[in-house]
Length: 475
Ligand SMILES: Nc1ncnc2c1ncn2[C@@H]1O[C@H](COP(=O)(O)OP(=O)(O)OP(=O)(O)O)[C@@H](O)[C@H]1O
Ligand SMILES: [Mg+2]
Image (cartoon, rainbow, N blue to C red; front, side):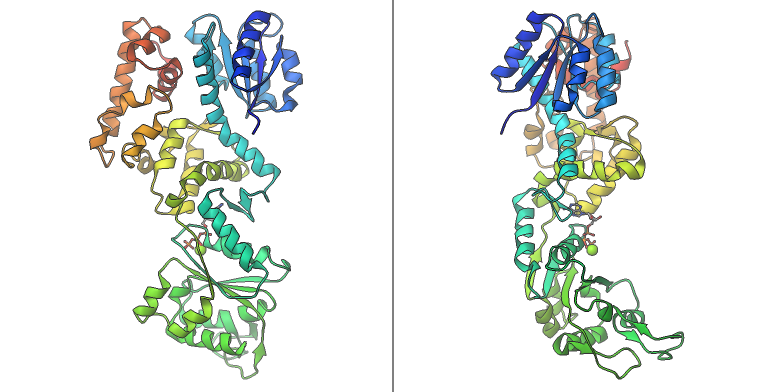
């Protein structure tokens, strides 16, 4: 796969070429510009990153940054500056820059910063892909995911979509069973056929019966007119029984008879009505156990469960999480009238390590809540709901190693090993903040020296300053 396209904008040919050289060596594609206006004109080439010199005669870096963000808020901008003035960098970050590099920077620092920024923009790129091609492998009929686990679900849908066999979908709550049911129907031979869903746990038995089979006028108090039931409405299409395990014994008998005879009578009626439907059913309970317990008819079980699709819980396909996040940010964009394009690496790390007992539905709620909390284009850790924030340090012990996106990450997480519930997270955070402050005070607010003192990279140091809101204070 070709590496990302990076724009380098610098009025000094030497320093621009040097930066381009390092990036090209790392096999990035680089376009070099000697001024801001030229770079702005070329933005439709869709660079992933723009490295922008701060001091340029015609139009300075901050101005170019502003205009880039107006044109395309998703591109990651790294400011390149020759003076070590934190104020200008802070100003740039407020305007939406992802990071900054101080000239002359060594190769390692440049590449680390670029990679960090690419990480941040990846989510955004995924949104773009989604928009362009919802039918891609990432989003099979609105089911987003690229993990092996979800791909195997896609493959199973493919296998049954053109047939008429009854399909049983099993999986925990919020995993997307209803989406799968719809995908089976809407990717089938004639998507204009009816798809009718019946929630077996939402209605009392009598109402559900009438809802399913319909009723004749006067068949019970309140039955003013003749009413066609959902079985009739679904003729030629798909009937989706959601929460099938909750169906009462009486209705189980009636459903079984319908499946055997392919016909039924309306409540209070005698006329046989014939319909041809494919039945898809779903539950988050263990239907086989319900059979063993005597709550669900075995004969009905075998009628319904001809082909089983198991939708795995989100924790077994965690590599779908970033993609789902991107999709959800995009999904709620219009609803909330809020353009949030980034999730900070720290927040993403937490999302990646949650157990997600409520699966995709829970992730959806968390993204929605976080979007409401954020006043910028990024979701940071503090925007996540409280209970999710606690996950850091509470996830499996491998978290610490994995989350170390640079050498500094581990520094502050030492000791959290003994904190399975993440209960002392607040004090760890406070400790981190105090450590940053003391280092800054000791070095008279010199970022380079302070980060050296703590043995972490400047990028990491700066990110941590931002996290604690220290980038806007001095002393
Ligand atoms: N892979 C996915 N991609 C996009 N959205 C998803 C995905 N999986 C689930 N969702 C969304 O999450 C929510 C829950 O999904 P759905 O209703 O299909 O779950 P379910 O398994 O039927 O849950 P329950 O057992 O509680 O009824 C829906 O809003 C759905 O659109
Ligand atoms: Mg459901």
